Length: 307
Image (cartoon, rainbow, N blue to C red):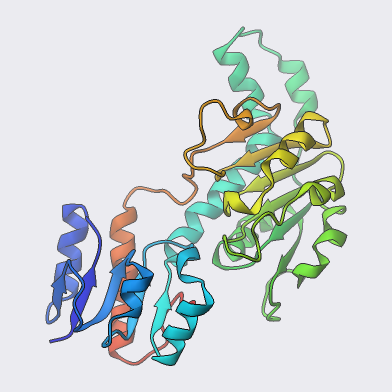
């Protein structure tokens, strides 16, 4: 009987579905040497020490703590697959980014602030400052499952969408360039959306020079990771009016302290790392794992494999 190590405290309905889908397996909560499959958020060092491990699936799109040369070498040397759960979070994250873009274009925050404050009914000013998204350029920094879905959702708005990524594969649905072209593209974009993961190559990538290179009046969005942004530089770009606004779902640190200046800098709107959240999230994670389990059993390619 193959053994699955599950690290999760699941709601009862999701746990029942996991148990039903893993009949014939020994489902355990604590790691043991005979584990051949891991599911959840297992410790990378413990994974590396399991001699029978063949596949691990984590319940997040990000996999920063697994993305190290040592871990990659260990997994590759033992032919162990690692999958993330991008297919669970691409839709909610893409919808979240679209909601941010539409909220600004239609001046929703301004109207809500008036509703919660003086209630002055600034209809003429809001109508005048509202915009259509049509014919503007969106630059996606990072091109994975989330970005692919973002592109699909933006199609009806007649936007010019381009992307940069670390390695261009050639199958992208929009013009995509190497990350080395980022500086050249920043000046052309009305909307700059950061969807990068956190790793050594992306830490602080969006720095003072890159915010200065952005088109005056551009809007910056971050649904990637807070560590990819120099937040002091972002604050300066908002305070001096170079950027029109910033919409952030991620910050560094998290939770963001109540005294942090990002909370009060002009035209900065923050959601508390909720872009991927949705009702039934745990059940969808279990179903994603079970779908991959059936593929694993049939020796078929696994979905969302990152190693």
